[in-house]
Length: 82
Image 1: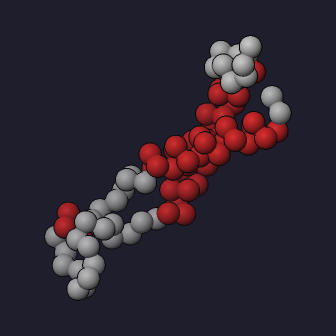
Image 2: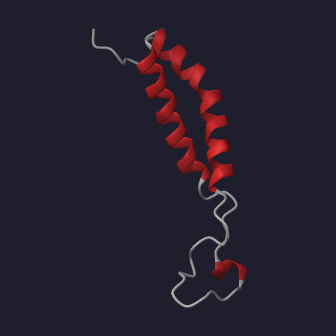
């Protein structure tokens, strides 16, 4: 496997795991029973913690990357045409 393909796999895994991690721990103003300032959506998260979620996504992608890379190298997942 070449370096660009390895990086592309990692980036795709990172984005997928980031989107999975986004709703973790998110509490809206409505769920918390709080009233927000005028113009603030009641369904918006009180705290988003994007940095923490980005690190969680990086850890998940780092754990999954060797498995997916192995499957690509062994041609279990057909990436290259025959």
